[in-house]
Length: 595
Image (cartoon, rainbow, N blue to C red; front, side, top):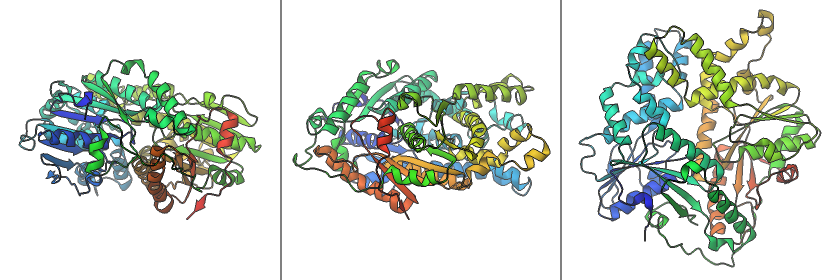
């Protein structure tokens, strides 16, 4: 029987939001099926570029509403945010092609290539679904896989004519640019935002895993959405290991204890929310049979309890580090979505290099990263510090407000200030701080945990922002011989980008998308690391044995399609905290495979 708080007396609109890989799509699909099975007419809408709704149902779903023939009462629609964003760019850029210099046009295109453009374009597409419309009149419930962020909602709530602001040339900031492409009346956006904020019409389901990183992210999302007036929120902790599995072997017991400890320490701000725990399932959530079991109270049968999964002979970290160490110095950047373990892997790689007698500077810009706690000690040859994103971002904001904002009226300044609260601003500010450290990599190893996205690199390369910033501080002779940060990132002899992911479909798709962004910026990732792999361990828990088998297809996709070289790091009984455990993480001597 399905007993979930978030589906109890649901309003017309249900939005699922959360970090990549937490199970938003599966929960949205399972919820849609549950409501349709109960006799409701349901429309399932995806705006997530990494979504696999069509794959889940085994059919092709496009940008027109189609019925799901195997589920009476259920229809689906996939809004392609990338296609929507491209329409935006064409709408804005095409009129100036051949009129403005190519370099200026390229700068405008990259300014409109970021996450904010994609999200606002997607919001433009599904606005019609949130207001009274002939498209949706026949549906009792509309379920959205992925909700707009608080930043996007705030942008659309801003008073005044942002179009006039842009057309008059008062602003050219990264997130206001997309607003120039919106042609519908603001009244329609106001109606859509009002629908989101109405608890009688809309419920937001915040999806997380029993992990500190995803719970912290959900807490930030909760605060951000509450600040915009979206208060009807429910929390779902997905993929919780059942206690019955904890009796099967030591690894399962350790996972269970860690998850329960994390759930007991849930952020205070989330405790008042209605909350559901969804048990981890042994099967891939594809097809109606699997989806109908996702929300059921009873646990599925998972096979022979005497089964043992032997660790697969997969390439370990040591092969990658051997190759890195041969260069003697260089920049090592670990990139990937939150929650994949970049901080731990950065600390492990830095510790191993320092243990070999090489000079290493380990740094991070992640406010949630605790490098000192992860290392839990000091090492010869290893310097550890962090860049404070808040400090760097505020410094950058004040500089922009003092220059671009100096002659703006109150309306224009309000728009600029909102733009400077976007995620793009923090990325730019932090990378400027990173650029001051990159020069060190010519003499020693610099290991960076958390790097800017491919979009930010493209934007900065197109505008030449960093180069101009550096040029202001140098004479003509010095600048002629200077290598800009972007040039160093594009040089594989100086920089090695390591993409970190998990052996799950969504994290692999997101890492592949990031790799494509980097390649557009002229940066070729050097290797992939698949972290926390069950397939790389020996286990007896029937549920985890099945999960290990499920991982093999994703690991194969990394090795055969995405990565030139890769390593797989096993899921451990204990978190690798402390220098000794971090070094043990790197001990595998199996070489990384090169295709």
